[in-house]
Image (tube, rainbow, N blue to C red; front, side, top):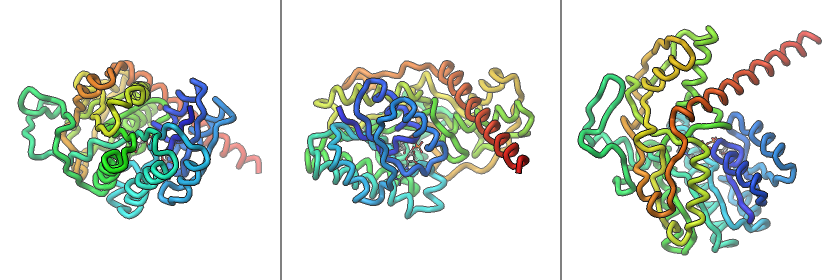
Length: 357
Ligand SMILES: NC(=O)c1ccc[n+]([C@@H]2O[C@H](COP(=O)([O-])OP(=O)(O)OC[C@H]3O[C@@H](n4cnc5c(N)ncnc54)[C@H](O)[C@@H]3O)[C@@H](O)[C@H]2O)c1
């Protein structure tokens, strides 16, 4: 099979691409290499298979993606290329729109015109549900809780696009569904909150689990005194490990007769939910440190809780997350340590080469 992975040098894209290469599929990666770490992920994928087809291009330029679809006629397209930070979308809404909303329509049009029988998988976001302040919450010493029995959100949660990122991803999400309704394209929409795992290059603006692990390691190393957080740290998300996400997408494709034109909330579920404060407690134990917090105001449109109800995915394509948060956090700690160690050795190499001059 031929698979096209847009954003294939990012976190989710490189995980799926790695899996597909290991299964000996033909893989085409399309990415503009704008994300920190994307060049490293490309080198990693090439190290797995030097025949990997890579196109450096911008998804917001129609001809760039159309020519790849037309030439290679992929049977499955994973559309991951995106501007991924809420904060950046507020600073640069037009760029965010061009990449996320327009870019998605470019993918859909290319598929509609050249390979209309192919499958398109799209990674949408919990942000399409807005900040959900109309819900009632209470709080424990470490986390917010929804009042009532139900702690997770399913796909019937009303859409409420907020923030440029919420609007651009939400538009793309709705276009995906509409191209199924109007043109019969086999699109599947997955709405995620927090995914973490190897090959993720977390930043302050995106990938909070990886970012706080990075900060905790720096506290352990003695190069940082306190960790800055937005809000009181009781915000809760369910954590989904990268391997579980790959398994989810592959299972959904296998059941395309059921999943085409559908939307799925996909996350780690209630058992794998964690607040920022609870993550800090876990990191204090794992790294034998004491974390001091520096509190900043809440970010705009920050949900107090998002936990995915995975029931529809379980019913439709028998998927459920397998990696428990304890195991996932151990693996993530190893991955972030690897990145920091590499950064330090790259820095030493530059200093040494400068001193040679
Ligand atoms: N990681 C998460 O927790 C999470 C949660 C919800 C939704 N998502 C969605 O999943 C998708 C992938 O997320 P990720 O975590 O892998 O992000 P990522 O930033 O690691 O990967 C995105 C990739 O897209 C590329 N890219 C960005 N702009 C581009 C453009 N204009 N043209 C071509 N390529 C471009 C980047 O270089 C990067 O390699 C995104 O659509 C994101 O909105 C991710």
